[in-house]
Amino acid sequence: MTDDDPDRPTADPVGLEPRLDELRAELTEAIPDDPDADDLGVAAIIAQGSPTPTTPERHAALLTAARDGDGSALDTLVAELTPLVWHVARGNGLDQALAEDVVQTVWLSLLRHLDRIAEPRALAGWLIVTTRREAQRAWREANGRAALSSDSAVDVPDTRWLPETEALRDDRDRRLWRAFAALPRRCQELLRLTVLAGRAEYRAVAEALAMPRGSIGPTRGRCLNTLRARLEREGGA
Amino acid sequence: MPDDLALWLDDLVDALDPPPTHLVDTVHALLLIARAIRVA
Amino acid sequence: MTPGDSDDHAAAFSDFYHRERTRLFRFAAVMSPHLDHESAVQEAFVSAWRHWPSISPPARRAWLVKTIRNLLVDQSRRLERPSEVTDEVIARSRILVPRHREAEAWHELTSTLAAIARLPDQLRTALVLRFWDFDDDETADVLGCRRESVRRYVSDARARISEVVGNPERRVRGSRRGKGTP
Image (spheres, chains in turn brown, purple, green):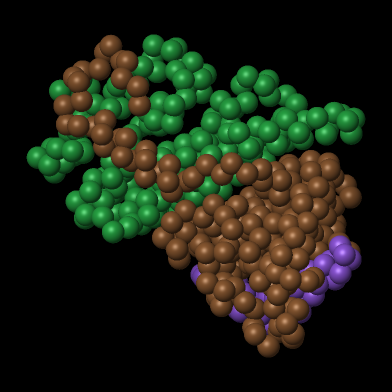
């Protein structure tokens, strides 16, 4: 903080300045600057602020019904969109147990915010943004330090990252999984979401990822290239 | 090949790392309780 | 708006988001550590995108700050049980990661943050913007006041914080007020 107030009553009588400096240093560490571009974050924000008539009516209608107290409408949303929330949480570096916690927190948060989602058609964007925030908070609390979402996941023990081992059927699965888990988190998140976005029932995600036009595609391409390079380095894709 | 990787990513989302099967039921129960508390 | 315009806007918005988001998250965290400050920032960005073509480029950041501030005020009004922003409430917010550090140092940081959070809105906004290196002209724009008033707000805010932190005798009687009390 600059020290140029001519009308300050006294020159820092109780050592306030060092205290504020220390506080600033702490908070700067707690909320670090992330130099990497966050295309997905921007896309999800833009999706929420851009009501377009093509976004799925279905989720909007369910959300409206849920607002009016229809519990089964909310349950349907949960059933249909939990995979989205799950993959965002997992893509942000959480192990399965923490990801489950975050999924629950996000849906509770939706219940609290039901009346305040400005654009019901943009539910997918809201879910993506909220889940990332909760995932990063959970990661920070579990690891005792700031979660830069662009961090590589390599410092996380392999076992916490593996899905149920029986799900990894063969050696190739395991090699792919290791290469995938070593990608920057933002890539893991984006690749998971672009898979969902390719499906009819997640058209909302596709639309959330479509803006700003053209930025997600190249990012996805770069992530795939990195994945391929890692696999080749490990010996034969 | 991109196609090969894309297939594996499909697999990752659906088969290797899908949400646990009980998760949706857990959330349903949680929301039921939360709504009951809000109404009360 | 043609699709081309829309793409240009999206690119400008994207640049703006990447450039400003960290400082705005930090601003909101110090303004209201006990509230859902992160969601206020996200909501403000959504709102900024919705109004993007009508916000003049030099005023964008001040627009975001004002919106975040309003959203935080809304949040605190909606609190079911508004309570005093005590040191304990701030400690529970977990904005400061408690690590292996001396209890006393930890307590000082928390009580400084709490003292800031308890300031009246104008003083707090002026102080927190200065804290994160916003210049006085921009702060004056946010507060709708003159540049000179910003400096007075900041020094007044500092004086009030000095009264409650860093001075064990005074901390006990933390409610003592008085502009310019040395």
